[in-house]
Every structure is written in C-alpha cells, then in structure tokens.
Image (cartoon, rainbow, N blue to C red):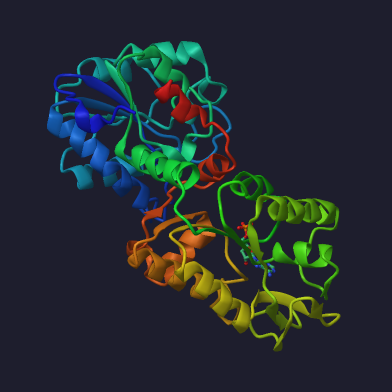
Length: 396
Ligand code: AMP
C-alpha cells in the first residue's frame, strides 16, 4: 500500500474525497465537526507539500440536483477556520464559473466543491462525471472511509482515471491498517465481543470471525435468540423467531472451530422497556413471563471482563444491553473498561460501530484503545469480509 507519507504532492492539483457529512444546528452552522477535524492530517500534509486541493464530499441524501439544506456552504466556513486559509466555494454544481476557479487554483489553495450528490451521475458511478472531474487534477486521494462501501463516482470510479496517482488518505490508511490487523493477524487469545439488537444484522460478521478468534462473547438483545435456540426461557426479551435455526447452526460452527462461546448466564430483567422499570437479576435461561432481559447480569459481566482482560487481541462491536438507559448500561460499561484495561496491558483493541464508539466516548476511554473506527456501514462490511469498492479502486 503506497502511503501519501512517501509521496510529495508539490505542484500537483489533487482531488481529495473527504467525508464532511456533518450535522448542522438550527442556525445552519456545523454542530459537530469531528469528521472535518479527522480529515485535517491529510489536508495539511498535501497543503504543506505545496499542492492545490479540490475537495469533494457528500452531505445527506439529496434527491437529485441542488437542495439548499444539503449545501456544503457551512462546511466551507468551518474548514476555513481550521485551515487558516479561505476555502474556495460556490453554492453551484460544476458551472463554468466553478470550472474556471478549478482551472486557476494555485499551490496551497483549497477549493471545496458543492455536495457531490448534487452532481448528475455521482451515485450511479457515472464515467462522464469522473472524466470531467479528473480533467482538473493530477492525483486522487480518497480519505472518506465512511463512504468506501459505495461505488460512486467520487468514492471509487474516479480512482481509475489516476492509475499511477491514486492514494488512500491518512484516515483511510488508519482504518485499513487496523482492520487488516484485526482480520488477518492473530495473537492468542483473540476475543470478539459482538452485541446489539439483532442477530440478523451481525450474522455475517460472526461467521467471518469464527475462523479467526478463540473466544466469542455475544451479548445484548441478540443473545436471546441464541439462548432461546438452546431451549432457554427468555420471557418477553427481544429475539428473532426466524433466526433460531441459524443460531443453532452458528453454535455448531463455533463448536467445530473450537471457539469458546460466551453468552450471558445472568441478566438484568425488567418488567417494561423503561429506565424506571422494576428490575431483578435472573438466570438468562429462566426469565419470567412478562420480563425482558435488558443488560448482562453481574456474574456474566465479571466473567466477560475476566476473558477480556486475559486477551491479547479484542474486537468489539455492539452494546451489551440498552446502554442508552443508565439502569441497563453496566454490562456495556464493564466491557468498555475491560477492553481498555486489556489495551493498556498491551493487547490490540479494535472498536467499531456507532454504539460501541458512543459507549467508550461516554466513559472517556477512547484514548486507551488501539483503534476506534470512524466508519459505520463501511466498517461492518469490512468485518463481514466484503471488498469495499473505494479501497479496492485504490489498491488495485
Ligand atoms: P445494533 O444497532 O444492532 O448494534 O443495536 C444497538 C441497539 O441495541 C442499542 O440501541 C441498544 O439499546 C439495543 N439493545 C441492546 N441490548 C438490548 C436488549 N437486551 N433489548 C433490547 N434492545 C437492546
């Protein structure tokens, strides 16, 4: 993999795909610029080299053509402040005026194109659009990991127009290097912790991880499909009737592969889906009728922490309970702390998925992890073993 670190972009015009899909407040200003800040290492490197930058990003899901509420104008303003240079921007799709500005861009200057999803053909991966965009630049850098699972013009197709000048940006490199480490290397014991609401959304990840890990901890709502599949009484806990056979198959697959499966054996059961519900700690396979498991119980939590703290590699995706409600957050919090402790003790720890990332941020543990993914859908597809078009387009 050729890193931008090893290349000088002096005197080049570079098309950079970034992920500036950020939220706005009521005044129409950027309310969380985490994604803009995350792109700065790549942008600063290119500017310091003496390149001229043409930035591309999507924002939301416009229906086709210009829609003011999806304009990147507030992003251009925010980015100008971060870079300390005025970022060129017009709230227009590739008009003659915009094209002139792109042609006249000088070294050190930065231009942000309007939302690429306003451009005809972007989401279809249109070649004509790619050709037009490519005509303004000498190189292409993709730093939008969150969009890498899409074969759009700006995220993948454009790369073909720069066969010798296409690169992953630093953020992409960070994701790819760490995901490859999580999937292709193994230090034992390797423990995967998979949680969240549904088996159906994580099934491909579980399957892809079975040959790679020693221990699989399955918690959260999805654990009840497994517990019921083994004959447990789960009360009114969440489960997927049509996935019971699949759960049995997966249990067998794990047994054949010699993977230790850890499911919660005690749970915090509630009489309703409410933080103020009545609760009791019960055996996970004997939940009374009308009660639902909303978090791992204390004994399971202690066992999981013990497994995690003696692991050398950990991959965590998905919460252990309804962690948004404080009374059902203990299982998730304990996993976050145990993963952090293992990491400080030298284990490689990879965290992905919006809820797991939200949990470690809530407990201020992000800096103690080896790797925290910035991508949602893209990271899930990577963990499922799928090839991501945005990454493949660069590496091939
Ligand atoms: P996912 O998007 O599949 O990772 O699921 C995350 C969601 O699962 C979170 O909003 C949790 O509140 C929810 N969740 C976790 N455990 C349970 C549970 N035992 N019952 C109901 N929902 C749960």
